Image: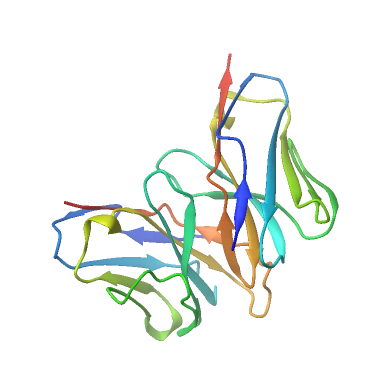
Length: 116
Length: 108
């Protein structure tokens, strides 16, 4: 069974540009999460999809970040325009069960974003 | 708010036992998870506790005391490949809140 995959693995862009990160969850997983780790800090929650619907986006830092999950499958996270403080590693995770708050989340390898 | 504390670094010898402590103060609690992360790779699920007590999975065990806001991860028979960062995470309403991670270095 394939794990969570993310693309690209690395992205280097200039301030003001746009970047789109992609996440493919484990097949059949209804829950999809985005997290971010900024240099020297802990991993922090950004948002949670249940199928194609945003369940919780309380961790999204501002309106420069837009997440979508087309048809309840893969998800994209767009940053527009990117700022220096957006640099970090963006992780995606997925879990299987609906209505199971303690269901295990499986993580992808992350996308390392550098904004110059 | 969420406050999850774990030591920054630990060093141990191959074949030994290491215990990584995690204390937490969070606004809600559904469970406590432990992940292992090698540099540049995905965090990998190790263990979780929902109820108080000890959960054992091979060389790894995890303990939880909800009344004390305390958990530990025990790694036995350490191997060189166990050198990694270990992340403590509290789950509340689906989302995980992480500690900063403990870097464990295993020496021969």
